[in-house]
Length: 336
Ligand code: UFG
Image 1 (cartoon, rainbow, N blue to C red):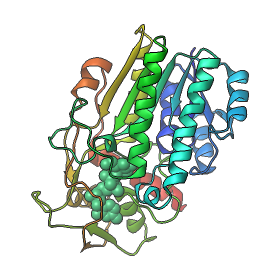
Image 2 (cartoon, protein in one colour; image 1 turned 180 degrees about the vertical axis):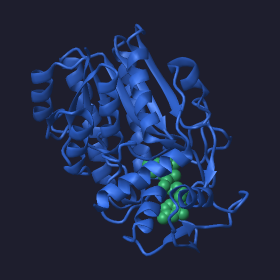
Image 3 (cartoon, rainbow, N blue to C red; image 1 turned 90 degrees about the vertical axis):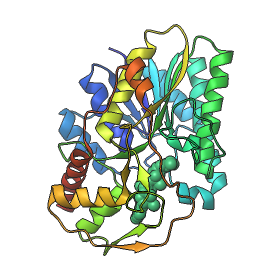
Image 4 (cartoon, rainbow, N blue to C red; image 1 turned 30 degrees about the vertical axis):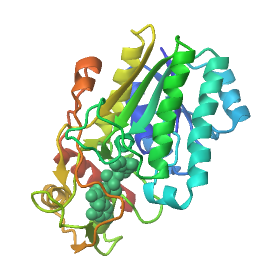
């Protein structure tokens, strides 16, 4: 059984990936400094798995503490999630974002070399495309300037990994470019736990339905789309987690690799469609009003995800409706 170091494994996508790794015969080892994760996720993981996963409370930008983990666990592969991810916050605190997101990857790569670990799956984002010229966005679409320091850290980290693969041809690397992850584990025991006021649409809808927020503000309804609201490619977090398993299985068959894959449904939904679907599948009211556009928002973006299907044998299985039902189950679990 392969042991996989999962940095940021107590986070939103990390925790769901830990479950899928277990379900598919891998041994995940979580490394997380809990800077943006919550202890409640650990209980949820234990309830789903039936035991406590291996966990190190370490900062993976801290060379010595991550070295201790490599020494103790001698992993076969790394999935690197650990990073700050709030677009708006990154514009306020660029130094903190560059320091954390780039340092942690560099530390992981240095230790992978020291301990002769060949395989890495990197948590990237469709933000690397900036405002795309063409839709759907494919892996070969031109990458525009990043629209935030967060986005730039993802572009830089991808570049670091590509350069590392040139210098060390034995490395096997997969860059997974997520579109908009939503939803929660169908058990309702783990899900997204935004600290403070959520920035993202679906957690905001869920908290409004639960009465934690008074009303949702739709950021603009004067875009050039059918209903005037922005369009995104929403992907269920469990589908996303499965893609990490497929990526590990795929790189194991390669002699060397550095490949990027888009992970999305391959179709877009508008903000209004997401709200309407949430209301209808969960049969709960959500108060909303129209506000001004949000600075930096792209009008519409969705993925060409055919490469992941062709090469990794992966595609999404779960619908928007299922994701929004799972979100609501998780929100209700939190309110208990
Ligand atoms: N939205 C609202 N009201 C809200 C929150 C969001 O109308 O209260 C709208 C946004 O304006 C946007 C859509 O819902 O049109 C989706 O917004 P999110 O914040 O959920 O997601 P983004 O597409 O802005 O951001 C996501 C990821 C980022 C990543 C980015 C790349 O969360 O990490 O895609 O484009 F960088």
